[in-house]
Image: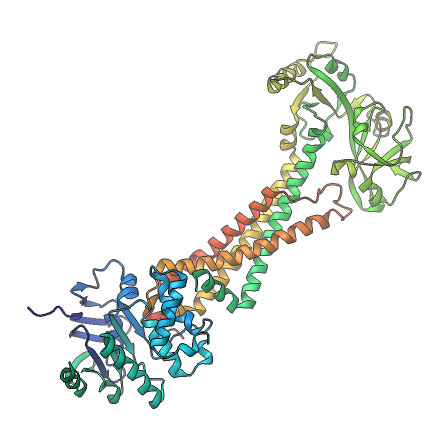
Length: 236
Length: 382
């Protein structure tokens, strides 16, 4: 019996009514637990729209997304789903500038069961995981862009999500910092078993994933396994 | 970090706007607490005037809405004194005069008999009380003396006739402190109201069932007849009912509530404006919070708590300002014989509740807007 995929889409369509733009057209996709997938495509190809639908940030016009076999459109509380199952990393980091790094990491935890002391302790652990223990009490404007993205990743991990969605996470970073952030993703995938879906323009970034899904005009036009996948298979 | 710390940081981040909102709410609360406080204080002082002397009933002309417009023949007092259960009856005349040179438009002048127990309630701080036949003398309350810049021995023209100030008194009651007192015949002559009094204050005997006694005596007073068998046309009103029904007090309270309502609407619109702008400015931030899993209810709480916190800060400042303002009013000659300068705890609680309502009303719509923002659209917002 084949294992239920962590995430699956069924004829996923998204049409924006203003201008009748078909952002996604009957996208069929399946992501295994523990997989690292990159979605590539030109601007306007629908990759960010797909990511938003996969993470329950938006609802499809037709079709559905299934997480662990459960339809997102039939979920009574998508907020709870996002809070508990999904971690988001954005290109522009989207940290709250008035809060310290440690406080930013704690923001998603308000929806969880942890006490203030437990939230702080867990945030400290996550800051250590992303190599930012020395910047706990700095505010985002006092940090480099690479450091900000690390904090954003720590925040995405705050509620122990099963799936990490990253939209152009290296888009605002220089190449050296981008490599550091990608190394962090690789570590989360390889050592923590995290399922990762990463949207990117860059081939070098996509090559770090096990599988690359290419999109054009709202459709999946190609899928390929990467050398990383072979490497992972070889080492597993 | 706790949720309230997150809220506080949001408020402190926008210091100028938060301060302006707090000031807006503070002004509204000041208006409410000061106006209602003054009206409330007026009623309390008025009630004290009778309560502290143990007056149970006021006998007035039937249908007279104001004590001051009531006129009753002085001889009715003899009949009242003979009613069973009545301990004492004190008649008095009251009229209103103005002292234009001191900018005092409405000063009460009381006329009492020389042996009236009412004099015992006054503490003479200078001079003496009027004695039998002292019909050219007047004593003035401490506030009135200050407003008129008069002292014992000075001459004082009242309604076109000169009197000598023979003493200055202080009373527990703010109204009396702003009034003048002379002997009853002197005021009757001055106002051309010979043989008349404004009304009688009736103190009843102690009784285990006071209410029943009051009701019985009221009925007896209504049944009193003139020598020709016709009714006197008088009524006895319990003091608490009289104070509550006084039309001027009702008008003052009505005006206070009306002005307060306007102030409140302005305050609520101010908070609404601030919170709408705040939500608009923080659209992307709300989008982030929703994207990382905050539920709609938490976004609602975030915005509502912020607006309520701003309103409570406004309430604290507003109540403080109202207390200072009310105290300051007592130093203003035009009203200082009318305003007690005390703001009751009840009025302060009303001020806090009103501020909470302003916060809730002002924050409700922005909270709704914030909560129902689509995360994807909010994240695209610049």
